[in-house]
Image (cartoon, rainbow, N blue to C red):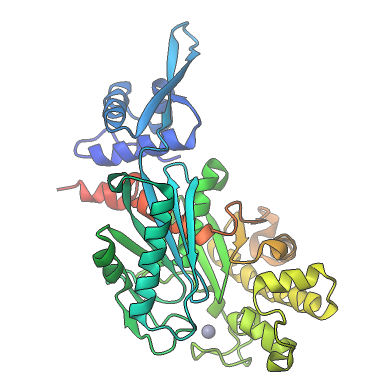
Length: 400
Ligand SMILES: [Zn+2]
């Protein structure tokens, strides 16, 4: 739990600390808020009054206090504002509209044609957002912004995607500004694994507090990092490239130029190639959901391939845990539902058998609680997080 500061010029930071505390505890009194945040009762009372005026927080029932005086409970007014989250995946664009509680109120998907040009993908993405907002029936003023989660490398400062997978010839594309200009809403852009981690933190509340890594298995292998309750993006927004950790320095050449990268073995395209590639019958399994169906149907070759993929993922995750001393790993990704439990079990067993600090603590490895729309919900949470959650940047911004 983050603490507030009673010093001068930290009003906006304290406001976010209080809002985050209300969000994390279902029904909390002003007295308890003061205890949890370390702020004075008077400061808490002033902040709560403003939050109620802004419709962000509502009073909701009472509970008997120890001294006999009833205490009014506070909750987030979940329907007050909404954000739009878009997962820009080269195979499918998923768009969700979520409220302040992380509840999905509308969803829309679009399928880009292979080899699409940037301008047609921007149009497709804008149409998905407009369709989802139309279904939600929301007034534009209740939408605070749009978050886009993109695979591969990004330029977080310039809001550009850089050579996204499966879209050859794209180079650098200013996706954020192009979409913002078309929609007339503020737009943020982040890596899809980072967005999924943010969504997991937001929806999971106290069960996802502290530090964890979200391993996102999609077209490639991404990893979102939440360290001490803060998202860690690295110096350019590209931290967590677990897919490009080498598991064999003399191994396969990866598209990044390095050898033996995890992604060169466990991306769906690599697994399909190992299974026989173009020799497979048309319609053979080629993404995680199809692999999962083949395993459920008892296909021994695909089952062996999935066991091997989980084992390779486990090898790389041991290095991740050794590097960051993480207590928890979350595994998710598009189409991974049928495989996430067995992947988690394999990774958890390996990490707790091989990580350096295995004698000091156990690492929990668990499937995502957010599910199929993790990256899109996470993208929406990026918008709400930047608007409402405490961050060191907010504190620093208030220092003259
Ligand atoms: Zn690589």
